[in-house]
Length: 423
Image (cartoon, rainbow, N blue to C red; front, side):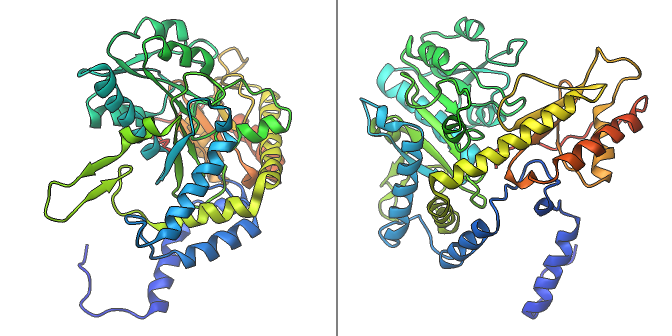
């Protein structure tokens, strides 16, 4: 690798090189990518791009210098809190911060649980209890913050086994986790039971709604059956919700919400023991770009409730059509009884004929331009369906049927996976 040149280069050459580098990236705009980027349409692009240009250089490290970013954060957090029914709280008001993504939101929730457990309950060896479908970010948080994890296998329908979780809840439990919905299979955990379990030992309950926070509220408005999961549930302490997923804002912006300000204070780091003056950081970052915060504000204002309901209707229709079409193809099946926008496709062990190697199937689909994340166990192809995929589902199902026939009886030794992340 050569070093940075002494002489700078003309702008057009630099941009041309970046355009060239992008040629191998997934082409998300054509709807053939199931995840990673979520496309709210031309007007959403336009408002986000204009907001980005206004806030390209602004820094939310100090909102006294940039009070507009303080306003933006308060307003976006407030709008999200009301979407998640924070007005139902009797011990509120809800409070929170913007973060860079779901991983950071989860880290903040775990940190707050640890700090509260020590301050209010004297716990010095904190533990958390979670199903094995909970996102890897909880394991990252446990590693970083020194919590012991008790992981419990899920039930046959891939929902959290709350009875099994109860066996691991005790006096050192700082946090109990549920998902709405969980990422691997798109099913929703029994949040009411999980929150009650946490409350039984005065532990925090975190609901990971990074995938569902900007889907479930609008699915409910569309008449979908959505089990209680948000601040209407007693015992829910914190919720993570990603605006840069189905909130259709550019990367990377998420919300960490706390039931009240008392809970929120436990994630904030305050320090005045150095010569640089008073330092306070509300989350994992110090310097925070104002660009994604402003984009989130602009996109939410542009869409409004009605815009989100319409995008969610299209998203759920796309996912329903995918599941229905997949069910008609011999040799494969959808894992779990998902009803929202996440679809995990695996081989059907009860099908007649040769088995389908799912990663070979993924390769065949990728050759036709369809991109999926890959998961295991069992080997499966994961789709996060969104408005981006509107208009291409019929073509996808036709290619899927042909690729299943083509790969039956073949296998691949390539066990490589595309890591599922919250960013």
